[in-house]
Image (cartoon, rainbow, N blue to C red):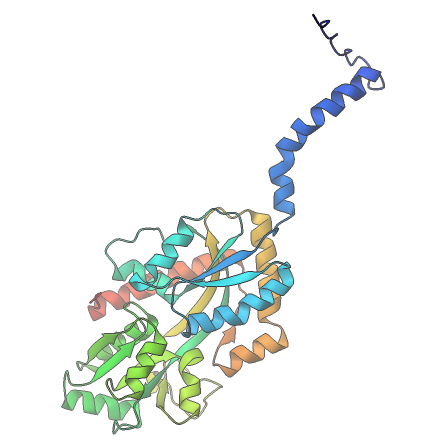
Length: 338
C-alpha cells in the first residue's frame, strides 16, 4: 500500500517553502475567478456579427456596409454584415434581443425601431430594455420622388392631383412601419387626400416597381434613392426634413407647403442589453472616430446623411423621444400594418 501523503506545511510566514507550493497549487483556481475579466479586457477575440434587419441594397444596408469595414480596421477582427429582414424588422431585431451581451453581436437600429412600438400591438422584445444604445451613426431625411410620367413638379402639384383623384395615386415603401411609409401617412393627414400604400420587402424592390410606373411616388432615404435622381430616372420634388438639404439645396422641403412636416430617418449602433461598459465605451469611441473620418463623413454627406456620434445616454433619450413622436403620428394618421 502506498504511504499516505503528508499535508502541506502551514503558511506561517510568506517565505516558508510550503507557502510557495500552496500558492502554485492555488494559482489555477485564482485564474479561473478572474478569467471573465481577462476575457473582457481581451475583447474582441473573434469575429463580430453585425445584424441588419433589412435586405441587401437598401439604405440600412448601405450604412452598415460603409461602417462595417472601418469598424473592423479599428477592432482588429472581422465585422460581418448579416442581413436578417422580415416582419417589419422584427425577425432581425428579436435575434439581437435574445443574443448574449458579449460584444460579438451588434445591431443596426433605425427609426423603424421607434415606429414599431406604436405600429404593432405586441412586439417580441422591449425596444428600450432589451438593447444597449451605443450611438447614432447618421441622420438622413427622406426624399419625395415621383415617376417622370406623373404630371407634378412640386408638393403643391401633388396635393392638387391627390385631391382631384382621391385614392388613385399609390406610394411605395420599403416595409410597413418604415419612415417612408409614415412619411406618406403624414402627408395624407396634413394634405387631406387619400392615396394607396404599397409596401415592399425593401427599397430595391420598391424602386423596381416605381421605375416601371406600377406605383407613382415614394418617400425614401436619400442614401438609397439619390443615385436614381442624379441619373434622371426619378424626379425629386421635396425633402422631408424641416429645412432644405445641403445636398440638394434647389429641392424644397415638404414643410414649405405643408407646415409641420418633419421626418428625418436615423441609423444607430446597438447591441443586446447588458453589454459591459468597457465594451460600450470602446465601441462608442471607435465609432465616433470612424464616422467623423474625412472619407466616411464625405461619403455620408454625398448621400444626404449627417454623421452622428452622440453619447449612449443621449441616444437612449433620443430613442424614447422618437417613440413618443411616432406614436402620435401613428395614432393621428390611423396607420396600420396591412
